[in-house]
Amino acid sequence: MSSASTEAPHAPIVSLVPARMDRLPWTRFHWSVIVGLGISWILDGLEIQIVSAAGYQQTLHMTSTEVGLTGTVYLVGEVVGALVFGRMSDSLGRRKLFILTLAIYLAGSGIAGFSFSLWFLLIFRFIAGMGIGGEYSAINSAIDELIPSKYRGRVDIAVNGTYWGGAAIGAAANLALLNHDLIPQDWGWRIGFFIGPVLGLFIIYLRRHIPESPRWLMTHGYEQQAEKTVDEIEARIRAEGRTLPEVPMEKAMSVEPTKSIPFRQLAHVFIVKYPKRTVLGLVMMITQSFLYNAIFFTYALVLENFYGVSVSHTGYYFFPFAIGNLVGPLVLGPLFDTIGRRKMIFATYGIAGVVLAVSAYLFSIDAMTATVQTIFWCVSFFFASAGASSAYLTVSEIFPLELRGQAISYFFAIAQIAGAVAPVLYGHMVGDGSSRGPLTFGYYLGAGIMIIGGIVALLIGVNAEGQSLEDVADPLTKAKTPPDGGGAGPTTPPPSR
Image 1 (cartoon, one colour):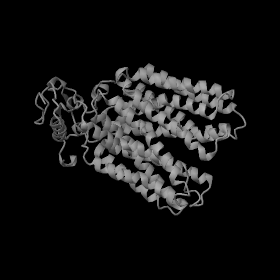
Image 2: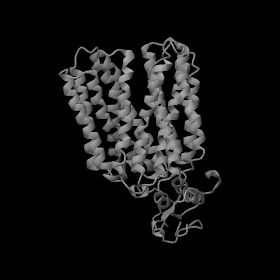
Image 3: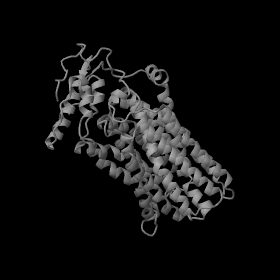
Image 4: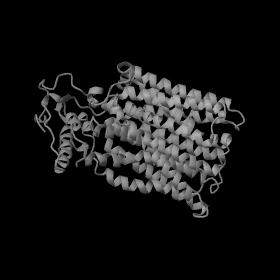
């Protein structure tokens, strides 16, 4: 397939590309998109879990503060990567960026495995974080634009939830890698850093066969290539013996392609045109980030200080927590396409908050064991995980296509910064485990924040289920004249495909 840069932009044009993509049945092509692109979140979960075990601490002679710094540097890298590559994804294309960002992650994580000092480790942890941060923008954009509207919600939610599959893999790997009877101390953690890159090399091969988003091509002046890409996808589907219905011309869209959107127009979209959607995105992203960081980063501390679980055994309590987070989006995801976005976001955020509040009361009266506490966490985050994944889906689909990558990056960055407060705050609440009062308040706070997030989504959320992305938010390049207004060029598609 030729590069988009070889085709000169033209305008205005009339296109059936969005309608053709949305009427496709579920096929092997869509599975290839999920496998090829969805691995990013598995890699992120794997990275966090491998690094959090801090097997490198003794080898590199690091203090506890320096170990914490490696996590902070990685998160800062994610924020920087999201901001930098999010804009590039909108201007250069989804495909170029999801290849580039994965390559950056592979280099950063792989080279970190050869670290010989703290400064070397920090540099390449930052680079790996940049790659993963860029993935969030490019991948969410590509998935939403390639998956038919009927399946978009469940797919996006399930893919985002696979982060916990990576975390579970990392936890399992650490049991062997950090067992010095099996693997020498200086090699176990290094091997851990190589797991992600090895998986990534396989994924780069798969991604080579995933096309550029036809929607991105259409709005950036590459209509002929957009049509060719959809033709190729449809040919693969027909080769499987599937019949595709014709697409009537009245579903065509007239667009005036552009190469980039200036920042002043971005500000206008977020602040003037869609202020309620901006508030919705901020509330959903910040609330889920705060709760997850609060619980996840103090998970082991609570088990150790309040339930007497040894450090070496906390990993066993993590597995059911990770599985609950993984299964929730898989089970509940389809309901976001049937029952609807607003109702399901309200339900998942609300139930997660209520269950956490009940556990807070039981915790305050010392009525739980470590096992019971873990069960409550599993139930709460079974729902919270689906809700958190829907936050990424929401900010991806409620803003115009031309700034989708940037929208994801901005909300992701703000959520990460706000969520970064939670581990420090809740770590202080845990203290030495002598008092349950502060952490009880913290749990009630987290529960209340999630419930508020659900209420906000119910009140001002967008009913995007089953709708084309172009119906949820008009592209900024949408022409002022209707499709039959005579503005189409020679690339106007025939009435049926």
